[in-house]
Amino acid sequence: MELCFATNNTNKLKEVTARLGDAFRLKTLADIGCTDELPETSGTIAGNSRQKAEYVWVNFGISCFADDSGLEVDVLDGEPGVDSAFYSGTRDAAKNIEKLLVNLDGQLFQNRRARFKTIFTLILHGVEHQFEGTIEGHILTEPRGTGGFGYDPVFQPEGYDRSFAEMSLDEKNEISHRSRALAKMVAYLKEQVK
Ligand code: ITT
Image 1 (spheres, protein in one colour):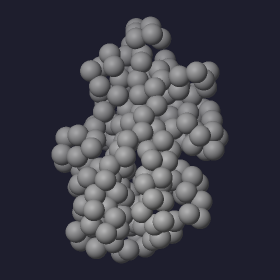
Image 2 (image 1 turned 120 degrees about the horizontal axis):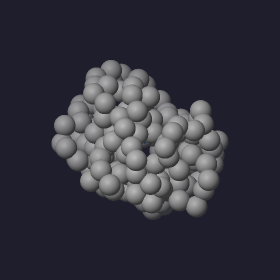
Image 3 (image 1 turned 90 degrees about the horizontal axis):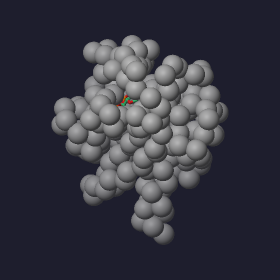
Image 4 (image 1 turned 60 degrees about the vertical axis):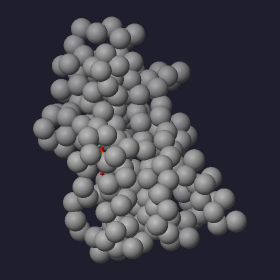
């Protein structure tokens, strides 16, 4: 089955491609000739995920899915949340992390609870479904590791003593918010093509 992954984030694409294997033929936005900035103005993760998928379906007429993700920190009332990509006013991951660490300055480990959340919106032949994946963890006091992307250097998943950025792609993919959402979506897709 041919599906377009409506993302401009090459790290998301890498993670999803590694996890999907050959089960589906993934098309990128470049493959379908889409060079547009996808809309993300709804104010929620679920809404932004829907907006991105609908943009591709409406303008290109191809079955597709989009990923909107965010990091929710309890003591910051869920920030950065839907604003994760532009938390510091730029897309610069180092600056976003710096702002997060400043906002958590002085908070002990038990007050640094957070979760990553991904919501996939799948539009299959015009029918829309959403799939959610989360992973609980804590925000470290300083960045650790060089793998992954975004907030991975400061996110330590529950039950592990390493950050996501200290894990290999496969290790992160075993447990991540994105792979959990993806597993649900793949199970649904397999039902549809039986
Ligand atoms: P697309 O909208 O093109 O898919 P994006 O980077 O704009 O790409 P989001 O709007 O979903 O994606 O922004 C989520 C931000 O949250 C992302 O830019 C990262 O900073 C962060 N993020 C998302 N998933 C992450 C992950 O697995 N590890 C670390 N940070 C992540």
